[in-house]
Length: 414
Ligand SMILES: *Cc1c(COP(=O)(O)O)cnc(C)c1O
Image (tube, helix red, strand yellow):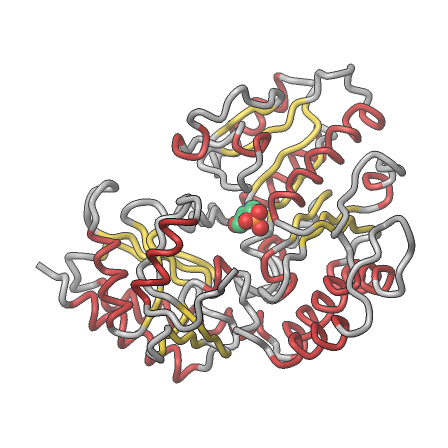
């Protein structure tokens, strides 16, 4: 079978439309190279990446230290399955546990798998430790959540596109409003069969919704008092993105189960994990869960290198500083803007809200114009544009990007 050699953008897009399942509404740009904060399209045009593959590429594209770990391990041993031990997994587990302050981890591949893993651990803990009656366990989740795309996870999504025609849905979830402690307390008080509360420290896909200060700490305290596991999905917010190691660190909260993915590998390879302490993780025993690729030696080598980069290059601190600067600059612009109503976020996970209806195509058109001006970003929900560059960005690069963004927005002012 012939593989097509050199492609124009149009050809590449046409191939995906013809032969791919069309599950994404991608911005029309075809990338063929990445380095640090930059990506290049097939014609050699250079862009700032302001999405970072949904915060998977926090360490920048093709970080040399991570690529070195990948190529070295790829030539040595890639996959053993868990039928046997390998000499990398234990190192990876110890490194991650020390890094995030947990006693145990369970390695997976995609973020959704790690969320599924956390839900299974939580239910098993609910039955075997908390003593909930068989098949009665409930897990509380938030409205407008995004936790991935499996059948169980979409069962508690409010996004009609994500859920419609995929029923019957998995039972056992209770939705409450995000950032609503009264709703959380009410549901915990009412229902003795609740095993866990699953929450994003910032709702990324929903449009970078930052909860009120103190929300996470108080939600965690409520969970403790009702003997319910606090499960933090930090797949998007973790690993330096919001200006701390984890987003929960802003409120000194220690989750009972921590879910990581995306930047755990610096975007080099799918690596995810659920972390917990012994009293929780020990409910999992041989045969209760697994994955052929989960915790493979290649993933282990890549993830260790990716986490070291975040530490060695102080990426969380850089995200904090640059994030403040970014929001200050955008707030300055917004003072006289008709097209942008606000900027919100933490660290380098930010979004602007466009002054138009949710079903308008203004945000999309702004993203097309940003692309033409050399910066790639995407709308999240309708009129919100997320800005999440790699954390290896410098101050002068960020100011360059602020210039591109404000110049582009100016053309849309009425
Ligand atoms: C992206 C994401 C997931 C799912 O990760 P995949 O690797 O796409 O399965 C889960 N939770 C959150 C908060 C995410 O942003």
